[in-house]
Image (cartoon, rainbow, N blue to C red; front, side, top):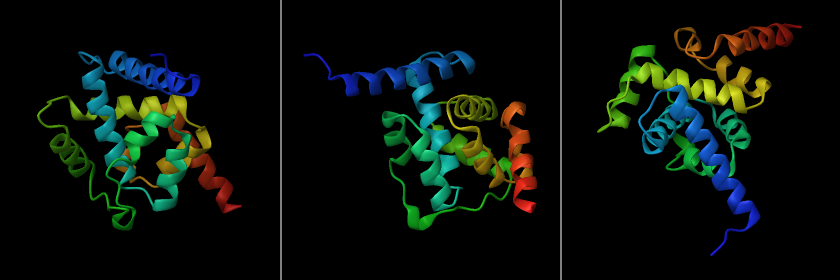
Length: 154
């Protein structure tokens, strides 16, 4: 059985993201990359406003978008990020039974998002994060949040 072109493209996009994440985060395999991607996306999604979570979701390839929205309860968001450590601890719990270096997992997924998503959208996402989590994003996109804040002041 062959896959239709749209389905084949969706599968290929997922494979590209997982391979890139596996290599960047030095994970053992795509299953590990899948677990990391899923968990980080959920932690991020649940801390964004509903509108921002939807806007970020629209940037994702179709299969990753499904993964992103899996189990989402929009009436329960955004969850307040109290600290970087709590964010990382909750992510560590979600990743169990896997034991990945959590901060490295977050920076790798944030890098993947920065690489594949619209810079303006990433700026909005970063703008909703507390300062102690913003530095987990690649330096190349952290300045976007500051630039968009300056534009909004005008």
